[in-house]
Length: 320
Image (tube, rainbow, N blue to C red):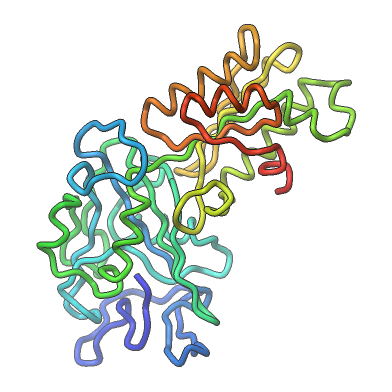
């Protein structure tokens, strides 16, 4: 969580620091806010959650329905003995997402291949920022202590957080973070309508144009969408992207996610593209996801809105 003078990731002066040689991003930032922050290029941590019982509830999850991976901080660190999130300084060649996943794997042995990044929350200062990356465990994950920064690492029920002595910065951010846990954004893209919104000759090679759109969507899935543009809390959301293709545009391969980030599922409509889009959106809504359908088709927007999905124009994805 956010690190200021003295840094929660820095050792107390009275205790030796057992960590190995520092990384390129390690170091202090003298911020114009009047505090010192750890992480020359900012810092990030991972809030990994899993459902503790099935739910199709939309919106923020009830604390009793999920577990979180928490780190019991080593006694030599500042606020030693409290519970927080695995994390640390970002390297100069890393995004906050990559940095958070790396730090969590180093400190808690959480494999990125077993999870899906869902959202992020950012605390910004004039010269520094801390990003909490929120991810869902898709496979069984057994966190364990894997470096000297932890006394213990464990799954903790969301309802049990009040019983733990939390790192103060984590406790301060918890109300905002709770609003992100348990949520998933699904972006269903009307391929034909989205391609048709830009006159680049797509109609001469519909399948090739679909491949181009797929690759653009794959980049978007990695970079994320600003939260305010999809009407969700937090800083950014990393959607599960479903691209619906029809007619001559069918037959394009999907792009799998890599280490918990990105990926585009390409779905070939057996008949009408609109019917498949409505079906995809309806299933995702029923599963409890926040769903946004990308299309400029007024009748299709009416139908998916009636099914409980939100809508956005093609500019949401093409402006990237």
